[in-house]
Image (cartoon, rainbow, N blue to C red; front, side, top):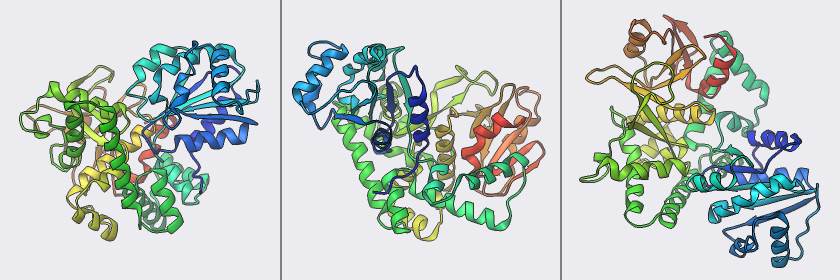
Length: 446
């Protein structure tokens, strides 16, 4: 099976090289490639691998019957399977699907102090159990969040080398427009990526066939798997409520007002009944929440209304796969984004921001047309970000920059289908540069 190079490959190598490394927990939604990347790393760096899947092999949930010490766990694993060997300094133990047995995290403290064996835990839905995992192992583990492929990883999968990404970044740094060939190529690649999303199975199928054929079926199966997780892990009325929220995200994103309205999810739906359902989807890594700022100023932390938010899919390809048949045809055959154009572009940018570590905030002033899609920040300044599905003026962006009401804001960014440019304190960048924005803001004075 074709292995897709991932950024976590380097993260795992750096973890291995760290002499004071702690057990690792890799969180992320299902099917983003966690197990595949971990096992490739293990095969290349250890002579002895112990892989235990806590869902497929429930008998291993008994290994803590005698306590959480390393010796007790080793003894019980050996009782279940005498062929498993434990060689100090050469062994990695992989506990997969940790969500099926979160109390095992208590043992990570003892593995951390013992230091004879390296340990990696992973699983989908770990965010749901995170409070339990954290309380059992706080201070004795390292956490990593893993997502589906970002645009840079997609370019690697297509066979492009790092020098192409560096060239895109150089254009951004120098605010130098791309030539016609470059712009057309990158825009086409990004649109393909957005329709496909970054789920490894979908991208792999696309790379091997060089066509979209079969991608929709894989995406829809992934969506069904997510819904099956909801049915499996959620009890009672909340199960229906979570599914209702999930199913309404594409519809609400297609509206002019993209704020998620709980009242539209079901007849008589109330915020207090549904907030936990929204948070469940976020903890599961399926969606991302974008909170409304109380006022566009620094600091951002705590400066938002937790009852006002937009919801985005963590993988735009799964949003695309959730659309109706007519929209599917337009997208895959005609590359026409239709009524969902604004929603898809916003979701693309939200996804790029999340995967690069930029938190999501927006602003909508009450009783006013002033609204801004996202915000990023430097050390000293707040930068509004407007996502434009089509050409036109950016009234809200200009108001935020020019008005004395917003002293933390001096410049803005417009993400659009246009080339790089800078005018009236607004940096315009094409969508395909979104994944580089955090790196840009760290490197360049803006």
